[in-house]
Image: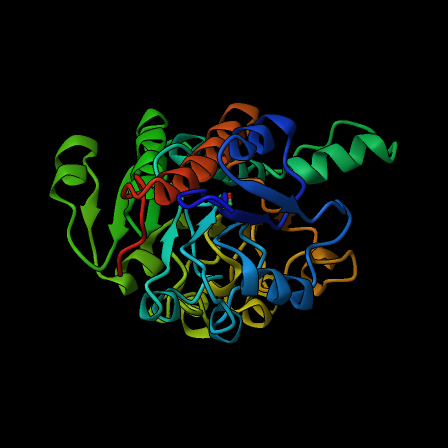
Length: 327
Ligand code: DGY
């Protein structure tokens, strides 16, 4: 009970993290974590932890709404292992002087790779091709079997020209794509360096062969791809979403795909994740679906994991964490 004896800050991790990350935190903190890998941390457990924690280490699928943040008694920082932070009520955190930190930059190129992979897989119908072989349905050479859409020299429309949108656009230039974008502000550097052209959303929807959503999920981008938007798209167009499921109205997308008002969709994200195999979109052959793996390369996930831990340590040392969310 000596004066000046400091109690280490307490950190709660909402996921089982590898020893290297836990040990890094344990050097300066008391750490506990949700150990079950099959299920996310229940809200009531997180509520109890948030009450006593100095720091929370979370992921994209842990909702941290106002009600939860209001329970915090001593919380200094919420550090998410993601660039997107729509799962956290940043305003509620700011009102209580709780920092929110995220991991921009390190996952940009990895997520752009996956976005482009999804675009290509949907365009050239890779899932159907793979199923054909696995189901032993590869028969005679049929002239128009599994014919898809050309990627090269097509028009790529990017909604949300941030770091990831630009990185996707750069990949498009290698395929000699004509690149248009829509964003809340013009991006003169992207225009100059990549040759991307700014267009209004309607023009992007009406003229693009690929409509790619790489915008953060906000009130403004909620269902930015709705029934109307889908209706404006070309019948040969393919929608690619690697942002957040909420940017697309899934019921409207189902109808558009089912009735051929667009050709296909490549989706890495869904409104309610995880989706199950009975999700209506999965009944359609022209949907290429992935389980939210945009940033999932080994190297990038390690960078994200370390960065999120570093942000906590910085905050406890009284430093400004490197990547604090400012709205
Ligand atoms: C992000 O970083 O926002 C992804 O969705 C999770 O990697």
